[in-house]
Amino acid sequence: MDNAVWLSALALLLLVLASLLVLGLSGLRLFRVLKVTQRTIGAAAASLGAEADRLSAAMAALPDRQAEVQDAVAALGVRVRVLGVLTSAAAEAAEVLRAPLRYIGR
Image 1 (cartoon, one colour):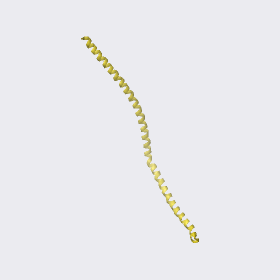
Image 2 (cartoon, helix red, strand yellow):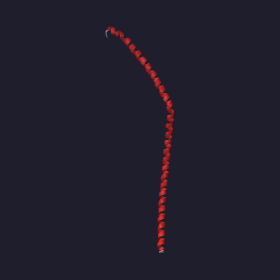
Image 3 (cartoon, one colour):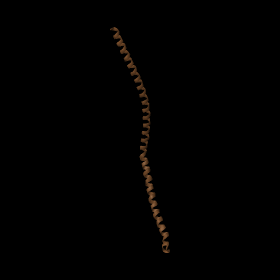
Image 4 (cartoon, one colour):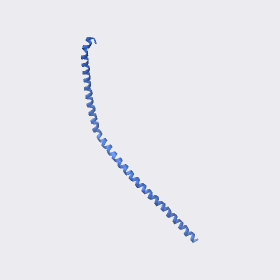
């Protein structure tokens, strides 16, 4: 009977040690995976932070660019009005130059 108790205790001890070994190896593998994942996430977070800073700077510059665009649109509007005046003047000049041809019959 004594041998059976010692054998059972020894078997239980071996099973516990094997379980602890498997648990330790799994924990080590999990630690390595977490370490790699942390590095990957850190690099992605740094990239995302740089992109956010770039977008923030672009958004901050947007009102200045909007003022530039509005000035350019206003200047273009002035040029369009000037071109309209020149077009109407050129049309009137062409009409005046063609007026004698109506009297000749052409």
